[in-house]
Image: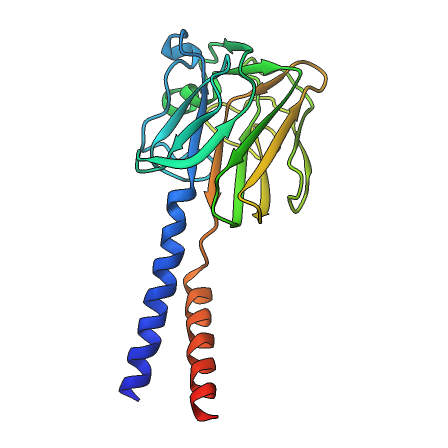
Length: 231
C-alpha cells in the first residue's frame, strides 16, 4: 500500500510539474503610448498588477504606434521564443480619465487607435489558453468594437465601454476568448464599430489543470500501469 501511495504521489508531482511549466507561456502586454505622461497612460503597469486575469508578473511594453514583431518576455521577465507580431505603423493615443489610477491608468488610459488590425502569437506550446483583449476607449465613448479570434470556443465577441473607472468589466473593458492552440499560433483581429477601435493590451494565460484534475490524471496513469503489469 505504501508503495502504491508513493507511486501515486510521484505521478501527481510529475503532472503538477508539467502543468507548472506552462506558466512560461503566459504573457502580459500593454499597448503603450511611450510619449504620454502617466496620467495619459504612459508607462506599463508594475509587476504586482494582475489586471482582469489576476495574472501578476512582467508587463511587456508594446509600442502602440507599432513595433512588432518581437520576442515576448514571460511573467518572470525572461525572454522567450514566442513572437508577437502585428501592424508595424499606426497611431498611439492617450486620454486623462481621472477615474483610472495606478495600473488601471497605465493599461487603460492609452493604447492604439485603428480601423481594422490583426495581431498574432506564434511559437507557443500547444494547449489550452485564455486570451484577455482590452479594447476600451478611456474617454468613456460607447463603441461596438469587434474582437475576432479564429478557432476560439466563441470566435466573435464585442467590447462596448463605457469605462467603469478603476475596474474591469467583461464586455465593457475587455473580452475573453478560450482557445486550444494546435499549431503553435493564433491570431486576433480587432475591428472598429461605431467609432475607431482601441487596443489597450492583451493578457494570454496558459490554462493549468486544477489540482483535482491533476490528481485524477495521475491516478489514471497509475491504474493503467497496474493493469498492464497484471496482464
